[in-house]
Length: 225
Ligand code: OGA
Ligand code: NI
Image (cartoon, rainbow, N blue to C red; front, side, top):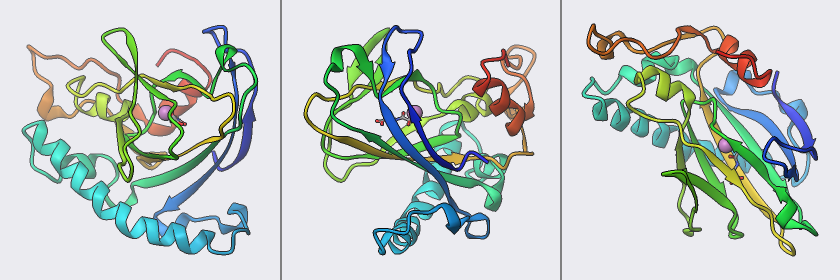
């Protein structure tokens, strides 16, 4: 439902304009893919995505395991709580053309991702910034590195032990920036809330338990969760 092309050229609360075109489409699991909206050209596009997924899926599985272990839980817990094999991967392609007034614009305004976590590959034009101790810090471009963002669903599942990261992107006067985030998401109807193992009388639930699609609806429409 979120799949398709879009553009954003509007004023954000920070007083800057956003400056981006984008395409969203699912890349995993295979049976939900809607090839109708995938680009027809370049002809290698589908093959390149298949190939990328071959590497991405095992990486995602490993990250789920490490992050579960990091919470002191069995390694399968976070993946299961995120839908197991029904967990989805949504690709977004961001296209930030050169902007005549980068001082007045942002690529994407400050936000946290709704995902469990996000794996992002940028091109070599810097622009991603991450909020740390109330300051925007430039994320260095590291060739061949994949950037991992903790998203809202992991903040919720971990009852706040993992924090979803605030980030934004800047634009460039003469260079085109692109980025390819992959959002790992629970299926729409899956109910997500703080894991019972992480909730106690001393440490009560800090977040509501609700279906992912209801979380998404509130966030997209700026309704309190
Ligand atoms: C996003 C995003 C950052 C970037 O699209 O959610 O955070 O570096 N993009 O393009
Ligand atoms: Ni993001």
